[in-house]
Image (cartoon, rainbow, N blue to C red; front, side, top):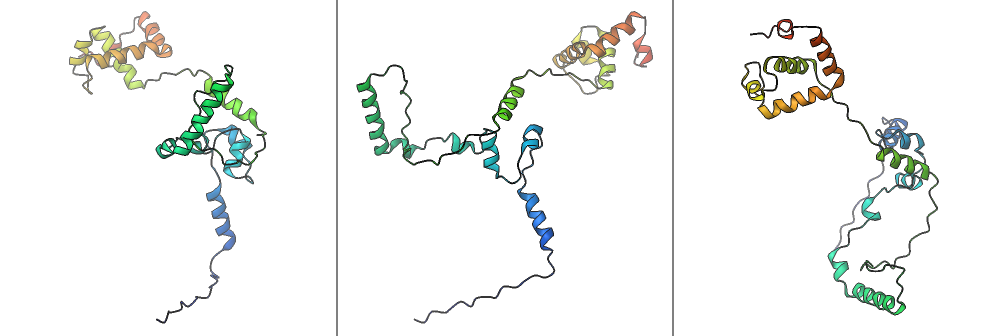
Length: 214
């Protein structure tokens, strides 16, 4: 049977394509945009690849490669089981109590890994870890309409949250429990609550000023 030979098509050069602009566009696509960590962004080297940059920072790039999850076929593999049993026998013969070998993995790790140089920017990892462990104070905020709403409810009903829920100014139909949490949040913001107490001590009538005395 005669085989048909495929004809090779000649390469066509596209003269209307701006090669420089195309290369710049491709280069921008390859850039890694680390927006949320200015420390990494300032020390990032564009000439190095992404895994190499992370290795220089002593960080993990691919978590699946660094901390692999063993597959069932690897755990049930008889070769790996034999190696594990031999390791356990050697440990029992040596009776080495100083080292804990109870969690020896049953995965074949005979593949030789390439020697990698030590990371040169370990201080960046330490600074990121230190920043992650610092306690952050959560700042509570409240909009001006919510502030006026809380003042109106406190002035009219005090701590009767059931009456607040039945009030016709409760436009969003908040429950008594939701209103209680809202009032607690209002009291936890010192800037707003202290201003309210100072104005109240001066004898200010909030219901008249807000035109909500009906």
